Image 1 (cartoon, rainbow, N blue to C red):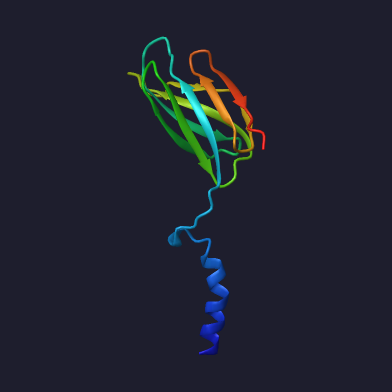
Image 2 (image 1 turned 90 degrees about the vertical axis):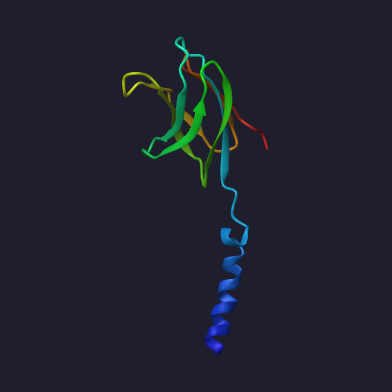
Amino acid sequence: MRRFALLAALAIPLLQGCSALGKSTRGEVVNVEVNNNLQIATPITVYAWSDVGSRQLLGNVLPGSRTTLRFHAAHITGNYRLVANVASQTQGDYQVSNPVALVGGETITWDVRSNVVLVARNNP
């Protein structure tokens, strides 16, 4: 019985951060404003690719529209590229941005047609 009480006493502080109890950590977020202004109006699917090769789906953007997507991760640190998978008749049409150094909390704007990424850092 004492072992159970000891294990319970040790486990309760650990469970407070558990998402099952509704108290998960927030992680970091980067707002990604995408301007899908491609010359030929085409929907795109946007991904964030890290410099170590991990990929995260951010969302879809309709042709001729601006949409804000959110990039969520436990830790956002390093260089990332935005990748747009262009819906077209041929497979493998991608628009890839230059690498952008992120630390979390930024808002970045990607003009897909000119392939320019602007970064706005939030000052604490």
